[in-house]
Amino acid sequence: KVMAFNPNEMIGAFSGSGGYARNAHYYAYFASNPVLRFSISSINLPGRSIITDTFQFAPELPLARPITTAYSPVSFTAILDGNGAVLQYFRQQLDKVVTVQDQTFKVNYPESYESDLIIDTYRTDGQTNGRITLKQAYILQLGDVQLSWADDGISTVSVAMQYRTWSTE
Image 1 (cartoon, rainbow, N blue to C red):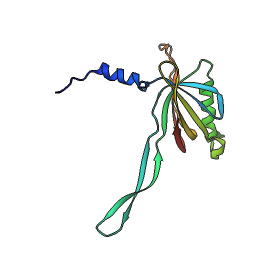
Image 2 (cartoon, rainbow, N blue to C red; image 1 turned 90 degrees about the vertical axis):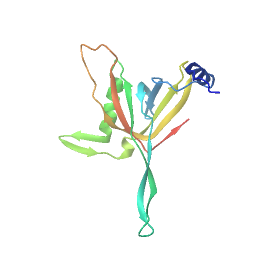
Image 3 (tube, rainbow, N blue to C red; image 1 turned 120 degrees about the vertical axis):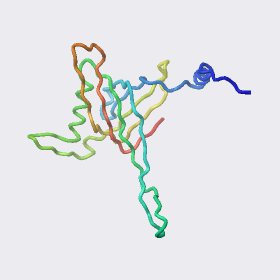
Image 4 (cartoon, rainbow, N blue to C red; image 1 turned 60 degrees about the horizontal axis):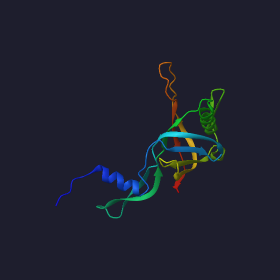
């Protein structure tokens, strides 16, 4: 006997077991500045790739074998505050990575700019649902901020982060 698919039953099953993950329920802060917290409207969670190299054990058998792993940058869209503190902090963090002075660029040491980025996730009822920590993270790219008289919406900025590793709780 074939049963018809009922999306309401699936949603009910998810709701009874902690619910399903929803967008726009993320708040984050850097461990180096835990007072400044910001909202994230969207995020791409960490990706991971296996890096291989080709080994040839016999002339007819070249084999690709794993040699290390690489994490893809995490990108997110941060909601900006009315005082400009979040955007200013992002710019300061970016300047810690590469200092620009008198048309010269100085790449700084990692200990001067790396910090853990803690992202707390929340359920729809406001209760915490988990935590993602990007360890030894730094800003790789800070996007443009669109300003317009015609748009009275919430200002956001896209941010890309690189990190050494990550964990979840």
